[in-house]
Amino acid sequence: MKEMLKNVVYAGIGAAFLTKEKVEALSTELIEKGKMSKEEGKQFVDELVQKSENAKDQLDLWINKQVEDRINQLNLVTKDEVAELQRKIDELQVAMNKGAGQ
Image (cartoon, rainbow, N blue to C red; front, side, top):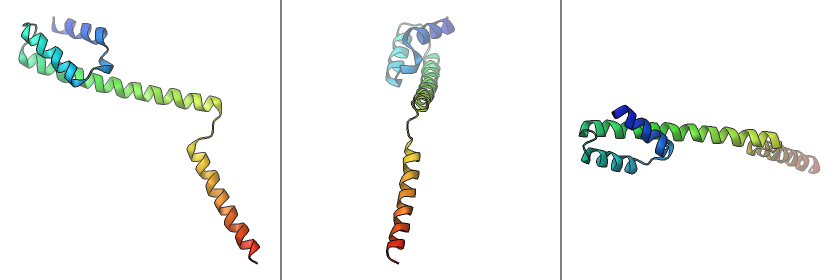
């Protein structure tokens, strides 16, 4: 029963977007209705919070990868590339100033 309930919760409300407060409220409600013990409720909260954090991390990685792929497809300049060009410009200006002073 407990595993089935967990699977329904994961599928029904999307573990990736649960906050700890929502999970604790759900756990309290299930305990009050006699669907699980306090210990099971604590374990339920811990597992859902952990799965939620893992899902958020995976979603963040996926989003970052998608953005990076799109930037590469658009052939946009990165912040590091701009910084490297600025460094080279600064070096050239220093070299030109030295040459103009001679």
